Length: 440
Image (cartoon, rainbow, N blue to C red; front, side, top):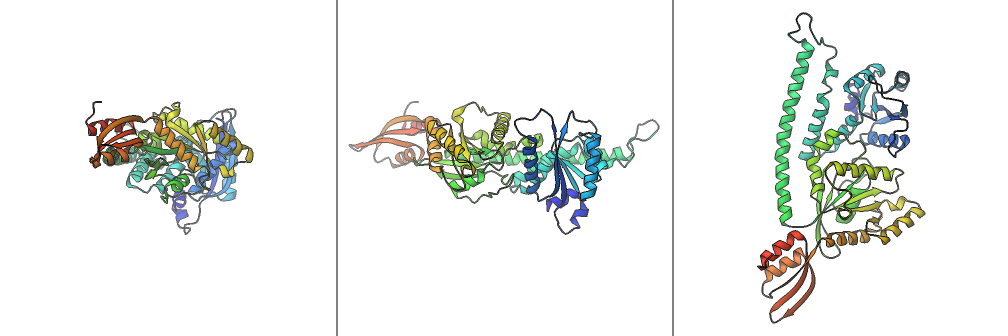
């Protein structure tokens, strides 16, 4: 169990029991971004549950300003130390970014292992990644994170000898050796990831030649992406009421009501304050999003912080270079309608009928999926161009290609010739003209 590893060897000797953990959400008064401290603490509980920590206490702590040495004030540090001792806490999780020094000082004060939000998310990703690429990306992110925290392991050694200071002490030598080993492993992982990335690019090139439009599911973690993906494709992807249930991207072929085939991609969920190491390390995975012809932004409309979660997703998309203001490239899908109140259900359904910018569904119950597929059809159809052509009825290969890759809007057969009006994507339009010998 990964929770046992977090608390160290002593917990592992306990027969794999859950680690007793204390959760702390520090927040600056008046600095919340549309999300309450209580909701942020509840999200932290969800992250802890993802690796089966036994949460014995969870608190919010207000700050006037972060303390350089311990992040939180000395009075609260002392109070938490007493709580840790009373509840026999083995692991304290601070919902924020701790410097190596702050982490070291809190561990000394609380006499237990301390990790921050980034460390916790890295542990979750390390447990959930299944593909070779996913594991490589997690390892790279973890090593990049750990490199700056090596000093915590060697504080018991002499850092600098007296005298001229030309030769470092044993601690300095060990730090340099460890950093060198980590740097070598980072380089090796980057080379391996480079090979995986090249392989994925070859797969993408072959997929473009297929060619089917790519539709990617994006959204906040636990918004219901995998449940929707399974409902539409019967893919059997892990779908659980748990943060980061899906890490590795999955692709499946799906046929729309018009008969048009598309590729549907399930991707990793986003989260507020996603660690920068993971944004960089998972960029190759998120390239599925960059390649997509249409993004389905899945939102848990029943969540009290649904709007703030939506803003977090759009922020990550902007960091990836996606123009979130381009309405034709993103379709908002309001999921978990079954959990919403009647007033919300009515409002969302009316908005869905009024415009094509959003669709209200329940992936769990299957409600609204026909409307969703029709909306995807319309969005992808907006980019299509109409080609009028004539070819011999005996040219079966060309006819089959046009039916397979386009939408035949009109057909007339006379005198051994076939007259067609076909809707085609811009990329396929050039291929069709080349196939038929037409000028561009």
